[in-house]
Image (cartoon, one colour):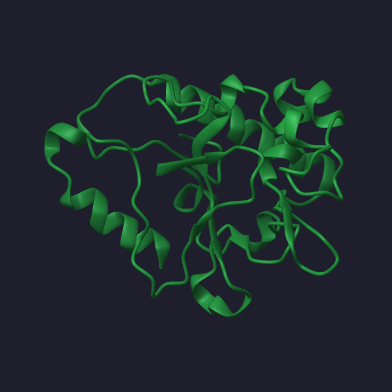
Length: 197
């Protein structure tokens, strides 16, 4: 399970890396994202997934769908939901800098990139299903969380940044190695399914 693999990572970290500390700016931004995801669920009875075309082509990230829940409705309204994130119609909106999607202190190649990503798995992943499933525009609901919300990773701080509007998440199927997470210090922030960080 994803939680077991991450548990092995966490127990391998030196004690200094896991020392008690106050919430970081990254954790504060993750908390806002987690609250937005929960608010989206409250309004729709499911969590947002990536947006796909009818032929299964990925178009937009789940982050686009939560824009109204982080006080970015004007940016959300600029997106054409049936076009790709980098289409001529969506490119300007996709290059808007959204502070909530940034990890302060960790620069990115472009200011509209983010380290905050979800895990995604193929439809046939079975018991090793991640938060997102490839090709599905909905990420399920609370009823789909079998390991408990406080044991389930919702959003993580990845090692590599991507444009925030791009549907580019971290692959996980229980067989692939766990993707690299966090910054040079080896620590990373995570939002769990219960909204805690």
